[in-house]
Image 1: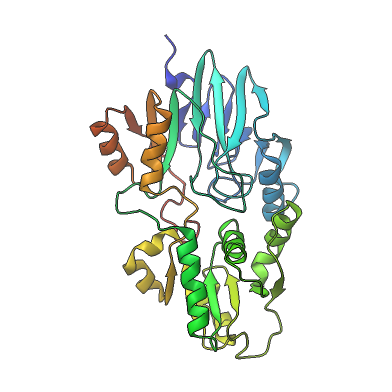
Image 2: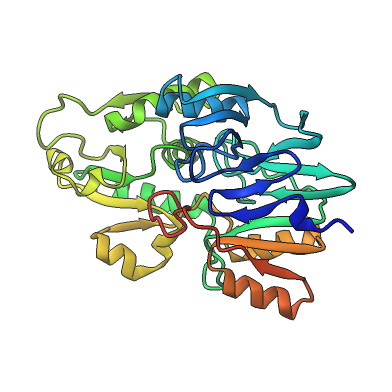
Length: 338
């Protein structure tokens, strides 16, 4: 009798598929990897061969150089390929540009390794696609009932309101360079902010990549060589580390903002000295997680990298069979990428 562990099993290197001899998002170099998205805790350089969406491969090349792997294979959403007799299909995860769930099928069994995902609308990437499966492997970054994220439009509205209240002050928004920064910029555009948005140099290459992929970010300007005490009333988007660096002192009495799901925790915002916390996350919140389990109704849910205990208890109460994988090497508590 075939067990689920015969198709996918946790190992020190990551989720391993024995019949196909490949890993999903391995945390160390392996011969063959299927990569769900371009964040560095999931997409590492040095694998022998990588299968991913064209956008994820482009992101990895941008971040690690063109020689990040010996061989690469691009798979568009919905395209099916075979690895060692195992069928692999990538479908959208709704996390960041090019993010995918790995749908892995073998001998009548289907398992979905969702990677990181969210269910709400994101104008910078394709929406999450639910896939019927026997086992759904879910993240649990925000796997506690307290994590109910407000609508993105409300949080961006708070930023625009602050710009109106303090027109003499620059507004510095800390946002992770891949995904979050571009989403914040696009949300501002959707809210009617038409003025140029200034960006830290660390964002420029990925912004150009998003532009090449058809994500319109509107007028973007660099912050390089601007005079001291400049950009009053303007928006500056930068990596979170930069808004607490000497670099930030160049601007006019800056309002420090930070876009992260963790900004729901007031102590974290206070600890970082954030004046305007923006609860904008690229991960599913509690409601999105349990709604996904309810919608899919898999035989088993496997929960990883996050707060497994809360979701395990929910599954027990609701008659959903579940287990915790406790994979090591994923930055589930990283403020910047969440």
